Length: 185
Length: 185
Length: 260
Image (tube, rainbow over all chains, first blue to last red; front, side):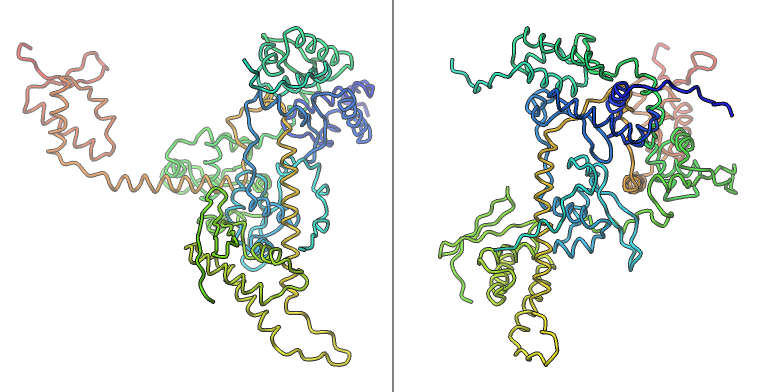
C-alpha cells in the first residue's frame, strides 16, 4: 500500500528540541508529552530526551526563564529569582493568599480525593462550606461526581490549576501525608 | 540629597541579560528599551549590550524562539521555520471555551430540556440564536424534535458530548440547589 | 467556678479576641472557621504542655468548657461542633472515672476512652501541617510568571466552563427573571384619562411628537392601545394635526400654531 502522507524528513535532535521549544511557548496551558508526540511525530523516548535537553539548556545558560514539567505538562516560565524585576514591571503584588481555613480544606481534598463534604468535616472538625466555595471559585478544586452512598453527596478533587499554582508535576509529587505526623509536645 | 532607596547591588551582564529575558517574556506588548532602563536601573548602553547578547544567544543555540526588535520594542516569538508545527498544534486545541452568552444558553437548555427557542428567550430575556448555533457547532446540544404547538418550534437538549465535557455520568448528576445550600450563610 | 475580673480586647484584623484576666494571664480566642473544636483542643493541650497520648482529660475538659463559656459571653455564636465536642469530652471524662474492670485472662485490654479523640487530633494535626506545606509551595509559585497572552491565544472574552458555572448561570438567570416579574407586578396600570393627560403635557412641551417613537417606548399592549385612543381623542378635540412629511415617513403629532 502506498503511503498517503509524504514522509517527513527525519529531523536532528537539535531541530526537535527547537520545535518543541516553539510548541511549549505557543501553548497557553502546559503542553502534554502526548500532544508533543502527536505534533512532532516522534516516539515518546525521543520527545522525552528532547525535553530533558531543552530544560538543561535553559538551566546551563542561566536564563531568566525555565522549562519545567508542571500540572501534567511542560511550560516555560520566569525563574523565581527575577520576581522583583517582573513585579516592578507588571506592577503586581503577591496575590492574596488563601486563608488558613481554605488551605486546610485544600490539603484534606488533595490527600483524600475524591472526598465529600461530610468527610472533610470529620477531619477538620468544622464546617468547610465557605472554604469549598472559595476553592471552587478559584478553580483549585472540581467536582468528581457523586458518591454512591446515602444522599449521593458530591465528591471533590483537585484540579489541574491546583497543580500549576502549587508547582506540582503531578499528584504523586505531593509529600506523603504520614510525613506530616508531628506529635504535640 | 540623600538616596532614598538603598543602592541595589550591581549585577553582572549575565544577570542583566537573564532579567531582561524574563521581562520581555512577561510583557504583553513589545517592551521598550526605555522601560527596560527604568526597571533594570542601568544605563542605555548596558541595556542595549544586554539585548544584543540575548538576541545572539537565541540565534546561536538555534532555538525555536527568537528575540527581536519589533514595533519600537523587544519581543520573544517563535521562529518562522517552525510554523508548520505551530499551526498543527493550534489546530488541535479543543475549543471547549464558551462565551458567557453561550454558557447561559447552555445552562437554560441543560436544566429545562427539551426546550424551544421562544422558551429560552422567555427565560433569558434576550435572543439566543447565535449562542444556539455555537452550541450546535460544538455539539454540546442537539435538536430533540419539534414541539407539537403553534409553529411547531424545534426543541433542544444536551448531547452526549455535553456530558463528557462536563464530566457527568448522566443528567441526574447536574448540581441542584441542595448542593449549594451549605454555601449560603 | 468563681468569676474573675476580665477585660476583653478585640483584634478584628486577625479575627481574634483577647481576654485579659485579673491574674494577667492572657487568653486568646481565635474566631472564624479555622478555629474548630479540634484546633481549640490542640491549642489547649499545647498550652498545658500535656502529652497528647496521655491527655489530662479532666483539666482539658475544664479549660475547654471555660472557652465555650467565654465565647457565649462574647456573643459569639458557638457553632454546633463545639458543643458536640463538649459532650464528647464530658463523656470521656465520666468513662475514665468508672472503675476499670480488670481484663479477664486472655482478654484484650479495654480500649482507652481517649483513644478515638487522640486519633482524630493526630489526623487533624497532619492536615494542618500539610496546609502549611501548601502555603510555602504557593509562596514560591507566586514568584514565577508565565508569558503574556500572544496573538494565537484565544480571545480573553471567552471563559472555559465547569458544571458549577453552568449551575451558577442558571441561578442568576432565574434570579433576574424573578426581579423582572416583580417589576411587572409593581408597575401600575394607566387609565385612558391619565394617558391623555400625559400625552397632552408632553405635546405642550415639545410642540411636536413622533408617533412611532412614542409607541415604541410603551411597555405593554394595554398602554399601546391606550396611547392610540388617546391620540385619536386629542386630534379630535384639540388643535393638533397628524402630519406625515413623506410617503412612508414617520407620522408626527404637531400642535397648530395660531398663524398656522
